[in-house]
Image (cartoon, rainbow, N blue to C red; front, top):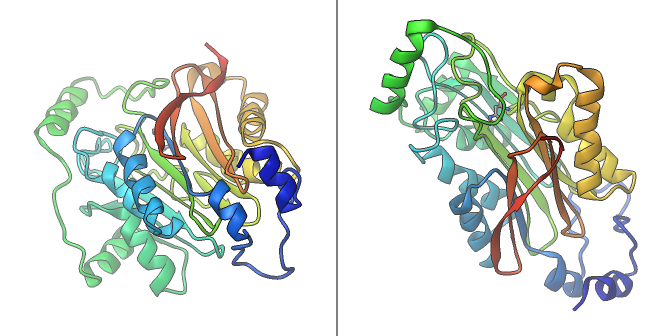
Length: 324
Ligand code: SD4
């Protein structure tokens, strides 16, 4: 069925999906809509294996929540990715400290920050969401919670990251560089066959960050936001700027106002640019998915791309950008 046809048949225009007032769980697609709109997965950067994993899970009927968790866990276990999970670049003191969050279709959320020695912070974030009355646990508390829940402690540094840290120590220069220097955080948003949307985000943060620094990735609304009536968004890049402009929440709110995912991401990124004349020195990128299954992304600088897994394809899409 063609998209236009689908929208007409479903009796909806744009993103105005009919909702039962007061419901948080919004699986409102009819059977007809299901066959068209879902499932869809989007993820930051070029993580083919992560979006493939999520796409396969969605195809076999997994929930969006399970798909985003399993999807981003692929990168948490990827030692070649020096910005996520095991193999992540340490802070200035040589400790790998992880930030992650997860958000469910019913609006529930869980998050961990400054978590050390645990390979899968997103799985801990999910436990925080499901098994505690809280949204966010940090540092030692997050670690203790993880250990109590059966997660194993392990060394997240490897020979490569240890050697790179030693080299960095020689100059101890802290200067984040646009798009290079390990900008590989994974933020993922999925819609399942029921039309329900969930998201996850996980990172080791900026390379050689100050001890105790927490970025945008575990902050609900900054690195990730989901509203199952509207869609979801995730951000990557300079976390401080993403936090200051609550970029993912902003993108979802712009979609609520009727903007396409691409336009919403563009306006969210432009907000960062407007509010900080120093934007030439950092990268911020936002991706979004709406309830119709449409996707988009936008970045300040060239070089950002994102994965779209939909309708049997797993593709890397070059993002629009403000300045080359
Ligand atoms: C942070 N936003 O901690 C993350 C970094 C990032 O790809 O996105 N890297 O600020």
